[in-house]
Image 1: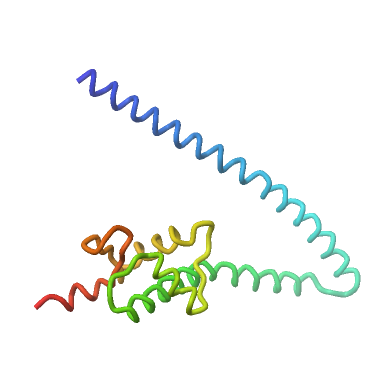
Image 2 (image 1 turned 60 degrees about the vertical axis):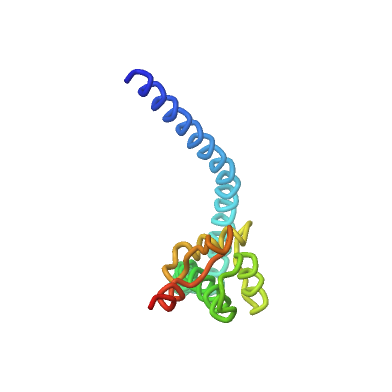
Amino acid sequence: MDVEKVVNVQAAKDWWLQLTRRYYELQKQIEPLRDERNRLEDVRGRLARVLEAVGVKAEELQQLEGRIREELAAQPQMQAARVSDMAYEVLASLAKPVHYKEILDGIKERGGEVPGIDPGTNLIAHMLKDKRFSKAPEVGKGYYKLKEWDKEARP
């Protein structure tokens, strides 16, 4: 029992170290963004005062800001839907399980784009969240298929 406790404590410490490292890595990334946000807030405030001085009403600026916030709030869901839908189109058109890189190429050929530092990883994440897709390990590592194909194959 004591050996098991020591192993669990060591595992917990290792996990804590990983989380702490990631926390500070993110903190380093956030600081420049905070500085830029503060700079932009300052410039926006000064520009708003200039616009108000020449007759633009504060309410008009607030309405414009509201529209921008609404547009930006809608983008992540739209982005995810487009990536998954385009991946679905690619797989449906090929009608066979394919490697995620081939799906990515098919999306690009259709004029689409998978955002992010690593588009392949992002594509996989979108497909794994979407119930229309499943891995195809029987074909090979990194291969994906449409779940509906499994249903069609059943007698």
